[in-house]
Image (cartoon, rainbow, N blue to C red):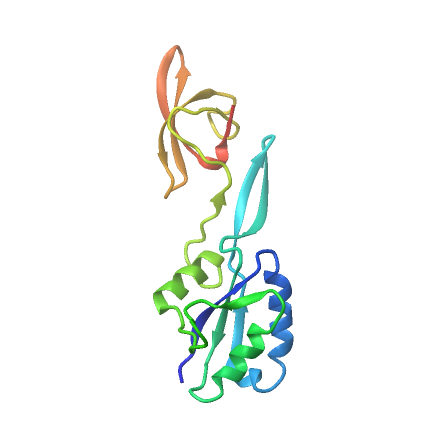
Length: 184
């Protein structure tokens, strides 16, 4: 037996309700020794409306819950069927026809947990706006505040834009952060 992260498929919108129910089940035997942790994969998203930043938490894998379990070779059916019987649960990902569920790889689990902020990394905040080359934008923050221009380049990994603005009658490219601009 070895601990692993398993993916539970649930009805979208029921993730938090099912998580609470499983946490209650974790206090009872045999779940006490088998189920260790639960995560509803979510991330912080920055939305910019009317020049105001608002940080909200959004599920980036709606309809899924991560469960850290140590499934025994014997008795795993009792644990899995107890979880599957919860209203709103459709089953474990990777379990077909009543077979024992398979955990996701350590790399996949680490990637998801980093994105949720459970594992510490350089925390990245996702921006809700989508920018593309040629879009007209207004710079709302920084040294080029109130300038308008056209997006020349989008660097999504760094969260930066190269915007061509008119300074002293000349087209000048400036690099700004996603959060420093709004679409016109």
